[in-house]
Amino acid sequence: MAFRSPLINVMASAATKAARGLKRDFGEVENLQVSKKGPADFVSVADKKAEEVLHAELSRVRPDFGFVMEEGGIIEGSDKSHRWIIDPLDGTTNFLHGLPQFAISIGVERDGEIIAGLIYNPIADEMYWAEKGAGAYCNDRRLRVAARKDLKECVIATGIPFHGRGDHLRFLKELGLVMREVAGVRRFGAASLDLAFVASGRFDGFWETELQSWDIAAGIILVREAGGVVTDQRGAKKVLHAPEIVAGNEIVHEKLRRLIERAGLPPKKPAAKKSAAKAET
Ligand code: IPD
Ligand code: CA
Ligand code: CA
Ligand code: CA
Image (cartoon, rainbow, N blue to C red; front, side, top):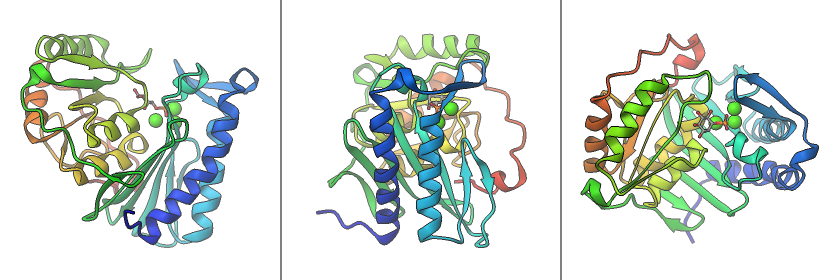
């Protein structure tokens, strides 16, 4: 049995509680109230309820920590060092279409560095978790990124920019460059799980543009603790607010990064809000 620290236990129990509602609502998707935050950017009552449970549970056990949440925004804590970075339902579009690829994602930031992460897919009952220096796990199994080095044998995941967001032409260029070199490309629709799958060796690599800190905070530490590399498209390690991220084992990461670089670099994101900009890893 893998040793889980008190911090990981707190995250696991909050995620398990929030997941109960998601599992219930997943079977009743047609009865869910859904609204649009922007083009092809949906939010349902399930996202909001899960976030409320996570916020209530985590603030009960760590009342001083701040929060960065996809739906609720930023809540400052009295402890200025620690913040939870939360996506209550990563893969909303999958969830609303009855596709069982979605997850709760919780990252912990301490003084600008991600020190722990947990990603829970309640349908597969797979809980991925990692803590700085303590390794990465799925349930009780220790994770290690895949060892493949030859791109021709690699399965690479990506995300297709949503309607109205991102540079579709540049993405198609990147896709064309990658497709020619690898065994297969996948788009599963939940960035947190894409990173968890890199950590577990199911995917050899992953790249995506236009992600938010809550999509990737937990996944970044999972991949790193599983022996992998995560950077932006230029190779910089500060990636939480980067326009594009690339992940894989050391060799695949660099090959993938160089490939997509040939499509040109995405424009720099406008500076993040003051408190959100603090979180860099
Ligand atoms: C989305 C998913 C998806 C990614 C999008 C994200 P959401 O998160 O992670 O894989 O391609 O960019 O917005 O909105 O379902 O939490
Ligand atoms: Ca969303
Ligand atoms: Ca997300
Ligand atoms: Ca979400």
